[in-house]
Length: 103
Image: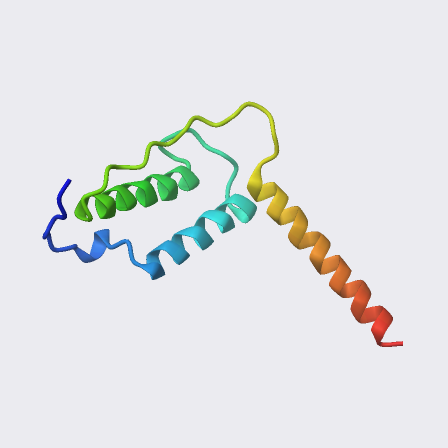
């Protein structure tokens, strides 16, 4: 595939700021957002679809094929839950360390 010379509209940019913002918004919706809704009304799915659309446009402009999303595996631990639990454990350990070091 060859690289495309198309101009990138501002609403379709896939810059570093958009990627960071999308990650933060998705995680905030996961932790503090509404309950999971049906496909068209779920804000997490909307953020995820917009991210994938922009990523695929970005890859097409660079001459790369779109990313093929693998189906989720059955069972196992969710990465977001693991990271949230790890963050909670880190905060508790930091609090314990602060209390013990102040004596």
